[in-house]
Image 1: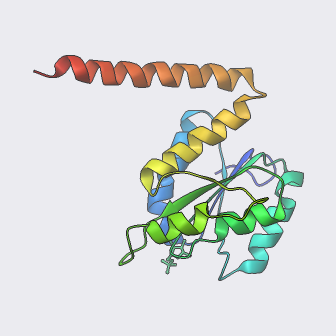
Image 2: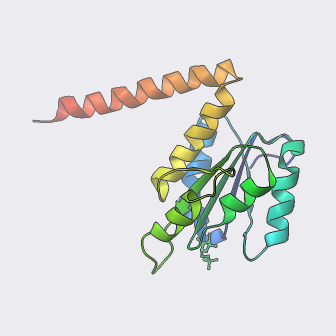
Length: 167
Ligand code: RP5
């Protein structure tokens, strides 16, 4: 896990029950050499911690916040309310709920003036949140830009190889 003092990306999630999905976000960041600060923070259960975390993130050197939550998911919006850093929201499916649609709408439907860049529900979104964060960092980091170009090439190659294997 990245040191709270040096991490450029913060990954926060509403509950430790979100970790199994958000692990893929952390792993994707690590593949690009980014060690994130990972925290369990709830917009509803620990609202003060959420506000303090977002208010102090920029001063700690964080450039992008990834916030994941399920159900009435307000974590990403709560972060965005307190910081000018870009916030990426990952809606998660909660057990017994409407497959993450609740969290998707709660995360994406921000009022004008307070954007949250919302990705897909669940694991795909978790992975894409990491890539999007890397793309933001890459705007001022040529080495990361190179890694992203390599990532895209490898991804294309893998799909092409699958295509060739088809009957
Ligand atoms: C949300 O409620 C969390 O992000 C989690 O997805 C969901 C359920 O939380 P737990 O009851 O499992 O802690 O705030």
